[in-house]
Length: 264
Image 1 (cartoon, helix red, strand yellow):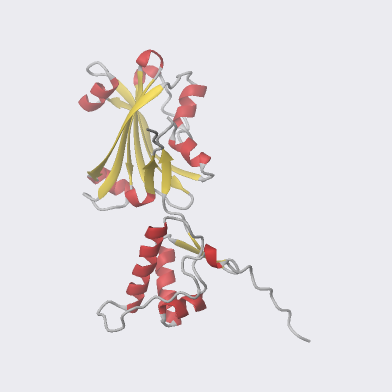
Image 2 (tube, one colour; image 1 turned 45 degrees about the horizontal axis):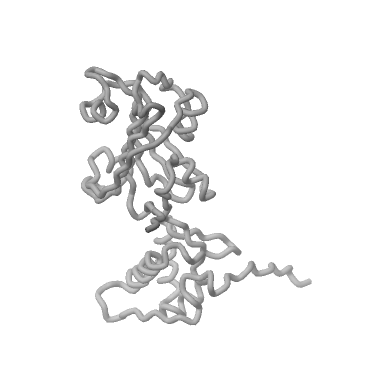
């Protein structure tokens, strides 16, 4: 009696693939750079160039033909890419490309949670601390506070189910707002402020710049101190132009970008 045959899974269409099956990429066997490293560099360069336009890698056999390398080389490369979280391999479904970059629309004042929800992404949050503490001179100036004033400081790591973490958020709110530091800060801070504490957010000032990661930022984001990061600082205002929150968000730049629609 013949053993049952399993049906092959759906084959990805060429337009979904990072490399077309008929494409050929020349590697240099004479180079001191190992073939697997050359192949991985070619894949990473293509991923950066197409910016999330394609969904899958070709099959193992197609990659062997495309790069003219051995099966062992292909497997070494795909194992490395999977370890970096760039691809996800599933039996019968093929090797999918993980979206590593998230964009934020600068045209509207929204929270991180609202931005991710609008893109259908599942948010991951690690609460580091939430406590009342003395406001530093810098924070006092930003929030227009008196000397010896206190703030609620909420520090969180956030990301998605695909990439975590890619942002370190440090939020500072005047203690006089009486937001309980034992609240659940895993969700949207804006929603908590508006729905539970009746603090209506009206507008904000925001600055975005490149900076070198501080020791704490580097530790939280698992990067080296001094690494170039993307920093967003936002001062949020309520009714009567009352400062409600100052937040410093430190992003790993390859995982996040800001987008604006401009009209002349």
